[in-house]
Image 1 (cartoon, rainbow, N blue to C red):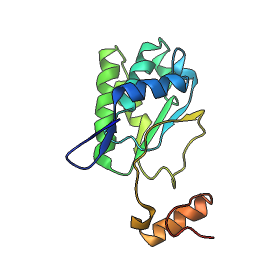
Image 2 (image 1 turned 30 degrees about the horizontal axis):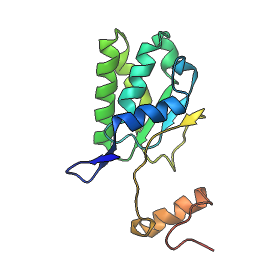
Image 3 (image 1 turned 90 degrees about the vertical axis):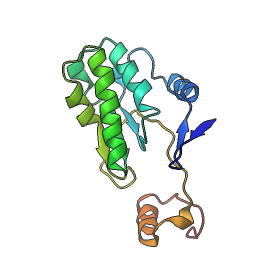
Length: 154
């Protein structure tokens, strides 16, 4: 079940996020995983993931590669950086702002240079393939040959 905002965004409910993180193995020694969130939005997965990192007891310096999140909208990236920094600061992290800046980036996950990860997790936005700019759709299909949907290449 999801919550729809006034901007048309749909946020994943917290219990679904927690269950997804648990089933994916994001429990206990979380910093040993390299996790990528392809579409961070307003932080439905970011908050719980950062809380788990903060509670792990790992050295803060070891967490720079633990998480990467992307979004097309800069305001989402800034929201997630602020959320992560607040969680880390309240947990006593002396490098909260630096970690948050290293973790979250404006960009297209499908077209970016994404680091190697153990796990990609999140709830990316659902869009109609037919609503994409034809040039962008062609680029996606070249990079992701299994992409189907409306007007799929034979």
